Length: 291
Image (tube, rainbow, N blue to C red; front, side, top):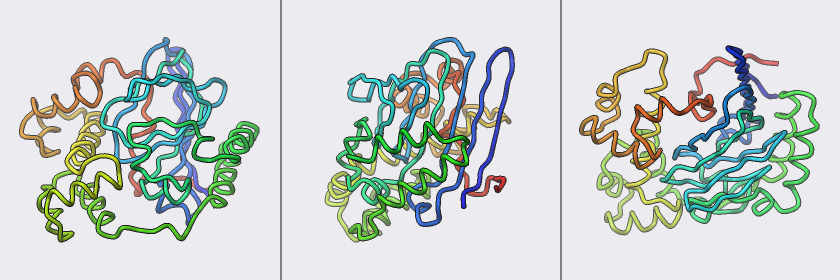
């Protein structure tokens, strides 16, 4: 059974709706939640797809997603899977967006699509490339579903059919991944290498082979992810306080990462990002309403 949280805002001709659902229990170690979104009334513009700890599955309604991958390749997708990346993806919109976003762990890419995260790093793949024969059914059934709740049921049904429970696990690299993500990138790479019993060079090579990004870059990504979420808080913490809380040497250090990961400084990013973020606030403690 799925749960859902609904948030709907309408102001000055801009309408924004967001609904979140909880996947089937067998999927939750790979997918923390489903997020449905619908926005209209904004001026046409550009949305920056930020680097994060998640791969991202998107199914669009009404119009395809016009996206430029970190590699520079541009295309329009009705359903796509974006891999881990350390450069921004650029999404162009006409002021309206409507679809579903599903964050995936790296293990989820293997368990659901038999595709290692390393093969998807910095890549945006059409869904039918990793879900041959099933992508069209997924898009059609989601588009024809009568409600968000019905869409969560469709996702549970189709993704459970895809789930491979015999995926080979790499316990050492899995431990390393959890250390990086759980500490928000604050544990030194040398310490993590020692935890898994490898020298730093060997550890970095194995981690990169498995996930597509080096442990150093992944640590920077999850630290940045924490920082941009803090900046969005209603309390509006100062950039200096955010930098200190997230373990940056100083505000200038954080600004350098923002320039690399978003293409602009924190101040410019906050000013220019008009679309509500469906990437933020994935805390498991956030209250949700049940059916």
